[in-house]
Amino acid sequence: MPTSTESEEHQALRSAVAALGARHGRDHNRRHLWSEAGKLGYLGVNLPEEHGGGGGGITELSIVLEELGAAGCPLLMLVVSPAICGTVIARFGTEDQKRAWLPGLADGTRTMAFGITEPDAGSNSHRITTTARRDGADWLLAGRKVFISGVDIADATLVVGRTEDARTGRLKPCLFIVPRDAPGFTRHPIDMELHAFEKQFELVLDDVRLPSEALVGDEDAGLLQLFAGLNPERVMTAAFAIGMGRYALSRAVAYARERTVWQAPIGAHQAIAHPLAQSHIELELARLMMQRAAALYDAGDDAGAGEAANMAKYAAGEACVKAVDQSVHTLGGNGLTREYGLASLITAARVARIAPVSREMILNYVSHQSLGLPKSY
Image (cartoon, rainbow, N blue to C red):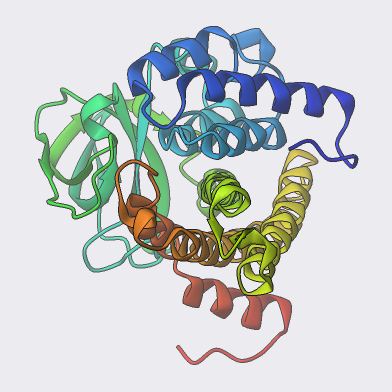
């Protein structure tokens, strides 16, 4: 679905990824799709060219995820591996870390999970209790994480911990690369109603010993490095939601054109046509905000990108849920059958409202940061 506001290069990327998605479709083999997307350069389109990437930004990577989602085959780990982890390592990692990780993240031969959410803190970086302390030249990492995606298929997890500031004694967030086979690093699958290729895990870090080079960036950089990953995560979640909403809407529109009752296709009736048109408008509006957020982030405006990324994620999540609901409703009973592939999206669509941050927390952010209203907490 190219738009005239995009450059020719972006339109070409969108068309090429759409063609890849169409070849794989709703019943895709996730491993095969991931591998092919990596070989074609789509997984690392946002990573530096000198490390095997495409030299683009989150703008390009969001196009990839949106178009794969619109074809019915979204890759959730695109949000995590190249968008969050790849971005953080590219911006703040050492040269050794970049050489070790970025080429593999770009071509899909290596993946990385991201661990921030905790049982009692959610994604609130100020309440994270996973701590890192010095032990000679090493770090010892201890704590728990929950709802961490794809740990079983990832080579390592970028874990958010907190270290003590020697001057103030206050804890500050830091990022560590934890290999999947590190002693003391264990995972337990969470039994989810939502069935997806990328499973969810609880992680336990029992004094995991890490070398000094496991720390990504400067231990004094704190929130700057963390939000370098969280803003792309929100933009990519918006792309995930928009793609899902577009897929559902396309199935409903095709059905409404063909399904005939009382001598006319049901799409001729405004009770069917208008809600579908409204969903299309809302998805397009969400995409515009997503594009703005991605452009601000790629331009280096982290503050502006933070506001826009939250708004984009909110708008896309709401538009996706409404599009899926209306699409299922358009098909009636058929909307709940496996044949049409929409029923599973009822649950999946709600993820865009919940993760990586709930719509209520986004409303808190906008009310405080954008409108200057006082906090209630």
